Image (cartoon, rainbow, N blue to C red; front, side, top):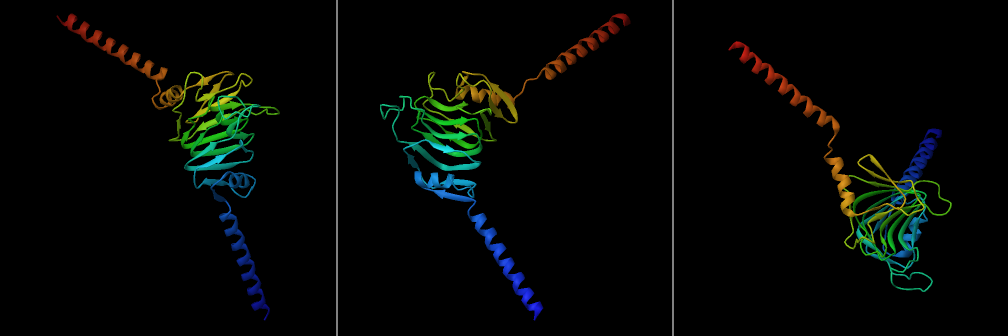
Length: 250
């Protein structure tokens, strides 16, 4: 009788454990389809990955303040609110509006378009990793800002993951794809495990970002130059020796 009771209790405990595990796994990702669902998911610490099920519009800046992955699933978050004290609908009127702000935390952003704001993304003392295609076209002042706001001591850090690509079809000399504000002197851009320290006021275009990536894919080191010089020197020495042997023989 006692053995049967023990078996029943063990079975009950196992059932509860499996049920809890399944619920946790089911809650680790969530698909959202509007602004309210996105904010709700960001406030739920049990959700580690937020997936866009469709294009969404937002009337306010979306703040990310905890570790999370935002999987755009090739969809768009578009800011459709107003800017500045004049409540202008023109995103070239400064209002400090970023479509997404990552504030003092780590986040992964993948396969998404961020558009309609003063800028697409502010990395405010956080660390963001890009995966897939990140499109920051259509923002009034540029694509991505690496900055430090009030009460922020950590350096803004952007990592371009393998096969990641930044797109900005509306880039101009005045609206760069990536920039560091004048009050931030320790921003970090990381590509292929190589760290680039960016200075206050520095701006990078798509072309310059691509050139950094290409420089890592096709490195030209001083070692190869030294080897070439050594090879040439050895050839000259051997040729000279052979020539002298011929002269002495004659």
